[in-house]
Length: 381
Image 1: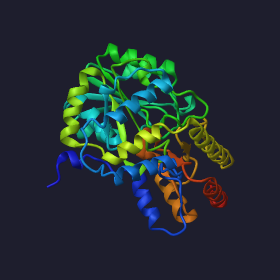
Image 2: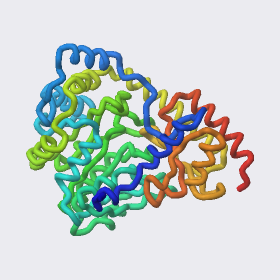
Image 3: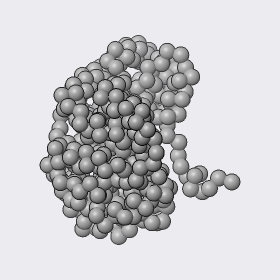
Image 4: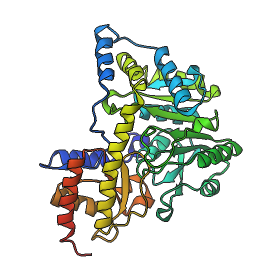
């Protein structure tokens, strides 16, 4: 018998599309956020050396001290923020960090406020611990930028946390420092905790990224090596937690996760010590790919209305095409061999949209554009 909790978990459509696409010949993958870069060479070399040194045993649940010190140094170097390594808990990916955050903060019936659109899995993390989701609709006409006043209207006496994402999946929007500061103040006024997913930090093109830790210590900040270092399958993330939550989160990690892989933690230190010039080159490559897709969407006559500032996604309105967004995604896959993600995966406000990922190489993006040019020329509107 399946539990009610498991039954409430909705599918992750991006992964469903990926599974269908993998069963189809000659498909260009614009549906998943999978960087096509290799990790920095020193990262791989460090992992291999660590394996050969026999570092395959358990570590402390909160992570190896060297990695936690490297993470703290990253916040100092990048944002000028002093983070005590004792506030850092290392996790096998940033998704487990979000699970720990929800388990530490949310009791059954508590409310978590998040944006709409939002990362597809966020509501399922909230529901898994018995929480309730309250959403703040983002307006396409405003470039999907969050408004603090909308959060204020959504919050109430049962609000326990704000779940934020910047740079954002699926919109690519980057929250300004002023917005983060105002949301930190708002959360404090409601005795709520900001939980901020910063896993796309380092991948911003037209905006400066700020960490919530610049504005408050009473926040849970999530990050990891998956996106900017192209280490998705390595499964290494972390969380910075308020001092009052450290013991609770560590106990949860001990019981639910045990620890992140030992040798991968050593590789994480190497990743965080990567020269900034490499990331500069990665960002510029993503910017060029973004511009290719933004121009193509305009040529197709689909409403974009904004330019993504970070991550590697954009949302395009396909409501002028026949059928709903699910139908359009099926059409693109079956008739053009281009896999994209239906926006309904990301909330009601994205139901008329498709998410395009530009994490793949520019030649594949150009080929996808040519295929969709040909297809859309035959579609009546």
